[in-house]
Length: 357
Image 1 (cartoon, rainbow, N blue to C red):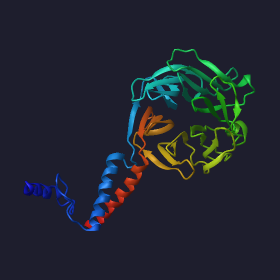
Image 2 (tube, rainbow, N blue to C red; image 1 turned 135 degrees about the vertical axis):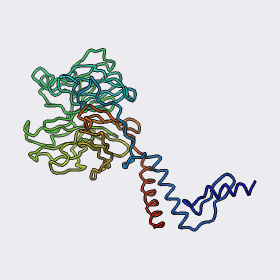
Image 3 (spheres, helix red, strand yellow; image 1 turned 60 degrees about the horizontal axis):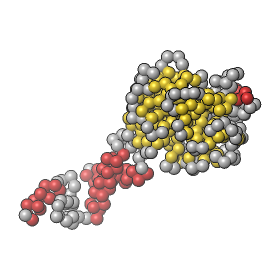
Image 4 (cartoon, rainbow, N blue to C red; image 1 turned 60 degrees about the vertical axis):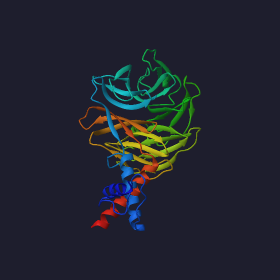
């Protein structure tokens, strides 16, 4: 039996991995230290590839909705883990709030809107911010049952309270408090889910009034609000990523550039110590403490990406595909350890190749 086992091990060993012998009941055959380290790194590389996926950026990318007959251009997305809720335009000429199963399927329009720029969820209600739905085309924050049964209630109407939120650009929540960011000046506000307790969370971040409006996006993580700003051609208020405590304070610059850099920034999500940004046809990432954004994921199906959200270990991203129709993608976020394994593995693979030349 021992002889047959050893013969089987010799066959398993092969020329591709000299110095290793592994099968039931067999011990590791003696090998040099450098050979063992070489194959350890190579093995780690294979593990990293299996964990991280086959794409060069290590992210599993799935197009879960492609050219749905109801959806037009989705701008913002949020999820309760069962369904995705979207704000944007429909396939004809209207705009509204939509729902689709998280794994893909038919899109349903729940409510009509005017200029819905951001969407979020609290309990059984969906909330959205609309820059022009008020009586004098002023901003409103609206809520309605996420079931789609209505009614729709405006919990904030700018003209009723002096328009502290001039042109609402995006909205997020911690489950109790709503946070908004403005196209006008870039200021962040908070309110409760009934519209009360309206509070200035930050000062204006840029001047220029209506002439320098742009489309900042907002996300919340760990008591800190993060704002992605696509800047303005005038150069007033540079494009970049900024943070402010949810309890209030001044902006901290995490990354800043010069227009037109980041001029296509259209979405932000934060989780696992990382800030994710949509920029044109790619997704960027950077540490929450600041740094230069680098490419996290690209895909041939990406056209112009817009809003995104994180749930579990996945990003859900909305926008237009490379054929200019609506698209929704799910993207697995590799664990930090996977990046480390990949680095070791690629080093080992390179070492192995050099040794064999």
